[in-house]
Length: 114
Image (cartoon, rainbow, N blue to C red):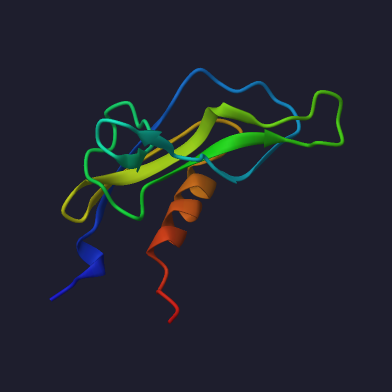
């Protein structure tokens, strides 16, 4: 039987720190096509080891109304992914707090609406 209480999480704060500014979180990093594997992939730098629809990375986007306000697709603020059966990892950086990062990750476990 499926037991949600058995899920375990690991997390760490990733560095370097993102400078304070007009950052907003809300854009998933777009996957890239991997020619050898013939699939869409995200680079988790070894931190996520199991393919899952729950795996994601959120990237920094800036306020487009501010000078130089374009998105930074390389600055990952939060990454979440599966590393084993009912075992997940969460990495985050400023300006996210551990509480906010964990809350965002919990949304990937919401009920599927059919």
